[in-house]
Amino acid sequence: MRKRTIAGITAGLLAVTAGAALAAKPSEAGYAPSAKVWVGQHAAVPGAVVNVHGVCRNSKVSALTSPVLNIRFDRTAGDGVRDYLGQVRDVAPGGYPVVLTCQAAGSGRIASATTTFRVWPKQIVKVPSGAPQTGS
Image (cartoon, rainbow, N blue to C red; front, side):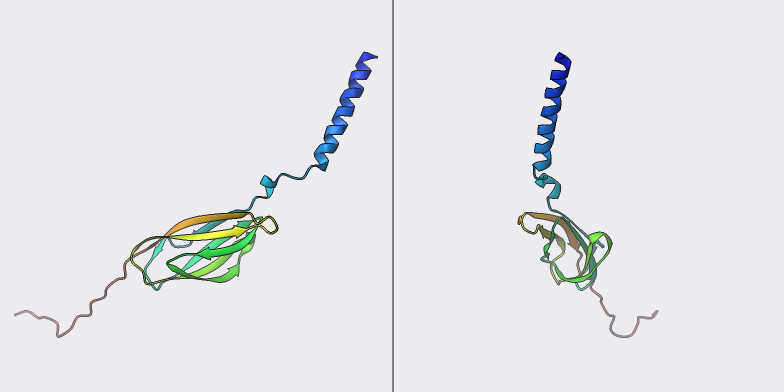
């Protein structure tokens, strides 16, 4: 008799806690926005066009910016990846950030990802002038 009472109380508690668990909202951590950005080429000279790729999970692209790239949308690829084209501006050589910002609808939660893109110096082409030198 005592075992039946304990079993009954245990079953009742399990039913109550299971009901509470089902009524609870899903964890927001499971729906947190995430962002990832990468550039097809890690470096280029001014004037070159490079591929930039970004993906936002549980959110939408809010902005894709870089102080060195003129970025425009190209197409949506598979798996939610968005492809962009970026033309390298005429800037000083060095490393520059490329930042993707994603924003979740409704909650306004934001995620961002940053990668570094390097600009190489322009190649200077010297055009020879005059006739070629010949032997004396």
